[in-house]
Image (cartoon, rainbow, N blue to C red; front, top):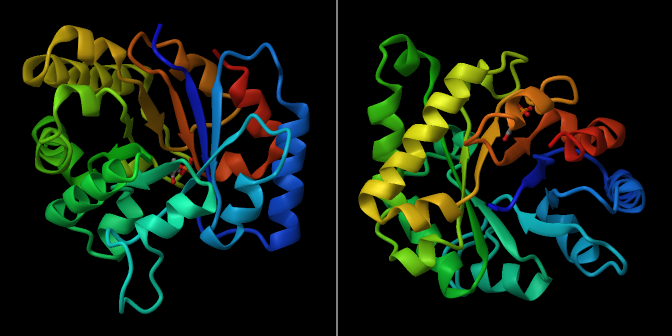
Amino acid sequence: MRKKIVAGNWKMNLMNQEALLLFNTISSKLDKDSIANVMVFPPSLFVHQLANSENSEITIGVQNFYPKDKGAFTGEISVSQVKDSGATSVLIGHSERRAYFNETHQFLKEKVDSAIDYELEVIFCCGEPLEIRENNSEMSYVKKQLEASLFHLDGDTIKKCVIAYEPVWAIGTGKTATIAQAEEMHAAIRFWLTEKYNSEIAESISILYGGSCNASNANELFSCPNVDGGLIGGAALDAEAFLQITNSF
Ligand code: PEP
């Protein structure tokens, strides 16, 4: 069975004590019988502390990093520093980074390679803006994102990655993709993986849905055959809502 994953993207929210409280609450109340692999992506300043806290089943990742070992890149956090912090996963290709920080296909490819070099798990985000969906071009748009920055990996390497489909028009808007829209895109992504690699590899890769997923709609979304969990923004800041999502399989 593919790994089921619920990942919380805290974005640029929370003060240190609030982050600690949220993390400890989730950690202590996680249902031991839940089949979900639970991950959180806090602001980088909190990562070291959370990644090194004892007795937590939660995987810690970073929302961003710079794909160099070290050097004169003021304000950036290197891939080696991410590894050293104890984080084990990285988000790459989130639409907010593509849109507000001009992260290009080529730059995202460099981030993917750099994370792989450091044996960090890649959660690769893709998804179309509203105007692309309105033009009915979402399939070719998402396929291009994957081909340009992820599908250069060999089969053994891509198997270790996770893909998150996040339609941009659904992120932070309260407007969720319908079950049909989510399943259609997830099935297409799996088909492209089969075309490029093979069905064994395609069937082994977890594909998460992101975009206004919450405690009320997670169950329905996660019941889609090709949806293996969620990347959660707003609802990940509420411990009870997030915990409920982790039990929505
Ligand atoms: C996200 O930022 O990855 C996200 C899915 O946000 P939200 O759940 O708030 O739409």
